[in-house]
Every structure is written in C-alpha cells, then in structure tokens.
Length: 230
Ligand SMILES: *Cc1c(COP(=O)(O)O)cnc(C)c1O
Image (tube, rainbow, N blue to C red; front, side):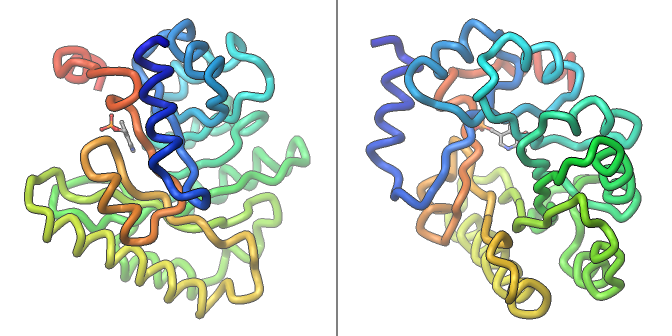
C-alpha cells in the first residue's frame, strides 16, 4: 500500500459513517490525487481556481470537486460548470455572481456559508452577526441556482484544545440557529464543514459532517511553497 492509500484507509476506518472526507489536494499533482482516487476516494478539495481547472480534467469524471478557498468573483465562471460544492460563500456580491453564472448554464450549485469564528485576522468568512444580517435580508431566496447546504468554518491555529472546541461548538450552534430560523423545511441544509488535519477528532466530536483534510493524507506541503503561492 502507498502511504496515501493507507492514510485514506485508516481515516475511513476511524470516521463515523455520517462524516464525509474531503481530501484537500491543493499543491499536489494530479498523479498523487489519482492514487487517492484509486483507493476509492471521490471527493477532493482545492483552494485556487487556476490549479483546480488544470487538475479537474486529469481525473475521471466521477471525481467530485469542492472549492474551499477564497473565491474571486471574476473566476466563478470557470468552476460553476463542474463544482460540486463551494464552501466559501461569504458575501452577497459573490452569491449574486454564482447565481448569475449558474443560471446561465441552468445548474444548481450547492454552497456553504463560510463563518469566521477563529481569533486570527482573516478576510474571509462572515462574522456571525454579518451572516445573520445576510440571512435576514433574504436576497438568497431570489437565487434559485444556489442551494445553501450548510456552513463552513475554521478553528484558530493553536494547541489549545479548549479554544478549538469552543469554536467548533460555536459553529455547530450557529448551524442550529440558522437551521431553525431559515432552513427548517430544507433537508439539504445539513452540512457542517469543519475539521482539518490537526483538529479533526475534535471537530467530529462537536458535530462535523465534512472534514477537509490535506496534509494528513498527502503529506506536508511545505511552508516555502505556501508562502510563495499564497
Ligand atoms: C488547506 C486547507 C485545509 C486542509 O488543511 P490541512 O491542515 O492540510 O489538513 C482545510 N481547509 C481549508 C480552507 C484549507 O485551505
């Protein structure tokens, strides 16, 4: 067994059946993604549009691609034809552009509301109150080509387990709040995308339905590359 194969298998054994694994393949070549595919993994996550559109045609058509990075409006058009889920819906302007492009090709695109709950400075994600306002304003109701399927969030990058757990709990409680207030009648509002290589066991305990795991499966990406391309 290759290491990719054995890591995917042991994650598969470890995870409850209701938790889906998004294998985050950013910075890794199609040949390595193919190894994961051959193990049975079908869901892959990428955070840069250019890289995604280069790799997507190199994998079989039943591979499912999730977009997990910050998405520029002028690039929405490139991924809307095939993307299975956009985890990073974090503004009305982005929503309107996804709606416009999806309507154009008559596709419905599942999207998650990205929430910013970590202590780090970050440009991406709604603050909880911003998201409440976004939902209350209701323009999403006029976007029939977007299916809001849940939420996504990241915990602070820290060794403090209590802090991480607190943030995952907050994400879960925001999910429950939004579900009750706006999506009680929508069975497709069901995803809580939280948990990465370093914190996924806590995320599972706190109710994650989707883990986004990269380095644990594919190996470290190397800070140098991250810096250069980020
Ligand atoms: C890179 C990335 C991940 C995966 O991170 P790992 O620590 O490699 O598991 C998850 N979510 C997002 C948004 C990412 O950018």
